Structure formats: structure tokens, C-alpha cells
Picture 1: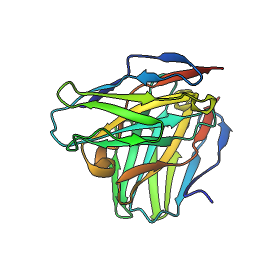
Picture 2: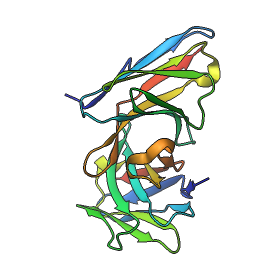
Picture 3: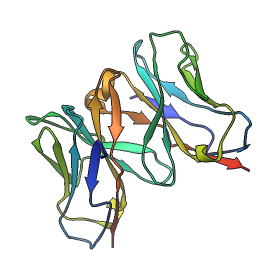
Picture 4: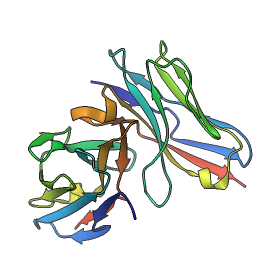
Length: 112
Length: 117
């Protein structure tokens, strides 16, 4: 089984709708991240959580919110989706002896 | 702010040959961590190789090796004996803190690697 999972894998929604992207991990890492990938732009940080009590905004947090329900779960919400939030969204965890980031499979979101 | 630059949007190489992907970065830190990630069409982000700036020895992982030039702030990836499965987007990434810290990883825009059979 994958160590970092994301649901859904693909989602189509309409402008103005609220949606939630979920991330779960079995790696036992405290640190979790949400990134966004746009064509030609690499990945950019949306939010970071050090643990369940610690949430930090990243470079592009406007229009997004997060919830760290448990060490293993970190959700990203779009309160009112807009078309320029169409992108590929990645969850990642960080830890281990090599202090490396491990990515989920990504969620492709299309906002019409 | 740190920046990571990948100057080659696309590279092409014949199968079994060697290819080098370029990456430069800008930082005022003396200790930091550099990564190469591979993103195949499946879109999964896969760690290829990791380099710690305080280590002078270049990291290697099987057919993948890096040329880390700290003074030049350069971190290139060499893929030897290229295989069709190496075809993917390759991203260079930087962080001053182990695992990424509060700023996460800073990524370059990627290089699309094509393997010609």
C-alpha cells in the first residue's frame, strides 16, 4: 500500500463550489505539506503543518484553507473554487533518517 | 528568497546514451539540501537523488549521479545508459532545512526529458 494517499485522484467542479482534497499517510511523519503544480511552473507551497497544532501559510495560500485532523491526515479546502485554481495538487510528508519529502500521487482538479 | 533555475525546458537523448540536466540555485545559506525529483506521465513525484551541501562528495544512485559545484551554485543530474523508463519531467529542488521546514521545497520549473529509441 502507498505510504501517502490522496483522494480524490481527479475532480471536476464548478465555480463557487466548496471542495475538499484529502491526504493520509502511514509514514508516521509529523510534517505535512500541500503543494500546487501548474504547467511550466513547478510546485509551489500552499500550506505546511508541523503537527496537529501547527499550521503555516505558504507562498500561495490565498483562497485555500487546511485542517490537520490527526498526525496522519491533512486536508485542503477550496471555500469557493475559481477557474484559476485548476491545477495538480500534491500532498507531501517529511521525515525519516534522510529527512526527505515523500509525495502522494496527486489530485487533478478542474474548476469550470 | 531562494530561487531554482532549470534552463533546459526540454532535452532529448538516444537510448543507452548519457544526458546531463542542469540546475542552478540562489541562496545565502551555507548549509542546505538539494534534490532531483522525477515525474513520469503517471504524475507521481519520485525522489531520484539527494545531496547535502556540507558533503563534498557527489551523490550517486545507480545510473544517476550529480555534479555539485557549491561555489558556482550548480547541481546537475547525469543519467547514464538512458532507458525508455527515464522519460519524464525532472525537477530540481532546494531547501535550507532538513525535510523542507516551514517553507517547503523550492522547485525549478522542470526539464522534460525525451528518450529516443
